[in-house]
Length: 191
Image (cartoon, rainbow, N blue to C red; front, side, top):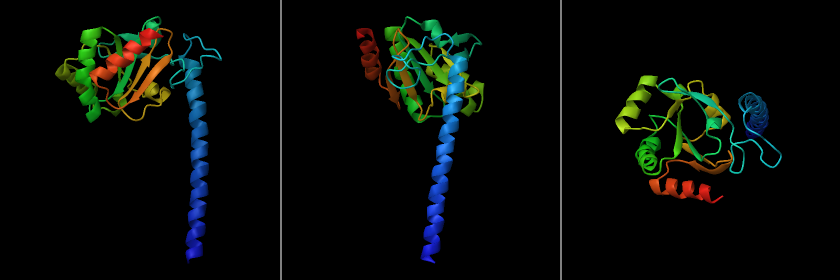
């Protein structure tokens, strides 16, 4: 009986590994296809590969704001940008937003707050959150999860600090404090 259980267990491990391997291959292919379609305006070279890790060239994206305005990351080439992925139902996001608003008011940075709208109850929930927290920086709606998939967002919040050349200089998982935002933002002006 133990032998049968051991064999079944080993088969399960092998099948699980095969499934994860094929899933990773499909994700890589899907990611490459998305990069091909969404990065036309970013120059990529062997020394500046496109990706979502520190040192990579940040993938371009185009999303709508709550007001229906179209915003592209590449519109801000030549400027430092903070891209924050968040939701209204995420406790660390709720903790982070007052500091982000204060940072925005004190330092006038470019912040693109990408809401994972496909996980929200409705866009109205997002509007109510923005009003409740008094957010005045652009809130972008990722209603089809294309940008969060492109950036492989998990967990939330996740924040990218992108320099004037479009290169990712810092990547944070979880809520940032005001002081951390100031520190990482200032580091980008030094490079």
